[in-house]
Length: 219
Image (cartoon, rainbow, N blue to C red; front, side, top):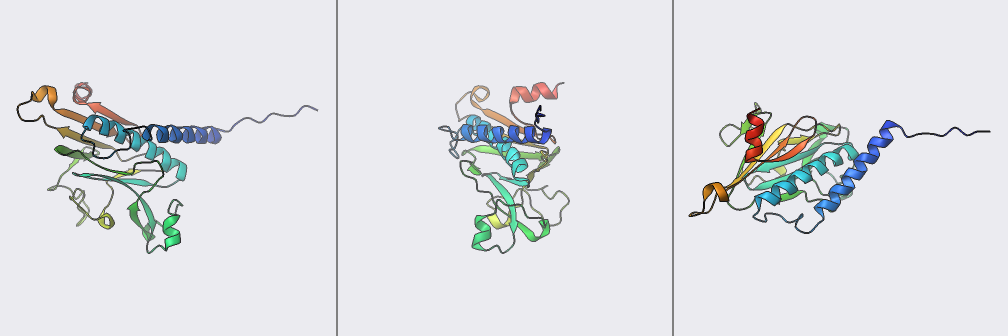
């Protein structure tokens, strides 16, 4: 009797792709120089952060929960929701999704071989736009009463991530702009550094130079 062969379902194929992507991201982020924080190089930092965001988005799909990204002028922090007043055992197992969103708080996201926080280089100017809306100290409330989104040196327990990476693969549309001016006496055009990390609703994340940004805006 002939046995009927069983093929792979679309869900199984997608799961394998996500796992391969996560594994590749871990390898890249584990390479020398890819895990350092605040290394003074906007070019490498932006590439590393772009790769980390892609990795975190894939991880959100793999874990089936939302991962947040909090940004301020000094650095960034990846975060997840966890039960309020969790015990030590619950805190250690905070990779498990919890159904009740209102009964959770944002906490730092910890993942082995996954750089989940970092500092921007000294002298780096940071700007953030969400869905085309610029966030700055004067206009940062996004319609939420008493919610300051871009406050410097905010304690971890008070942080609310501006960017959300959803388990369905969607992300908050954002532009994260990093600029470092040339040193006094240097040629500003030749020695200043500009990078823009862009994320769209579909989950695509790109790192663009100033020329690439101008080329896109001129289309």
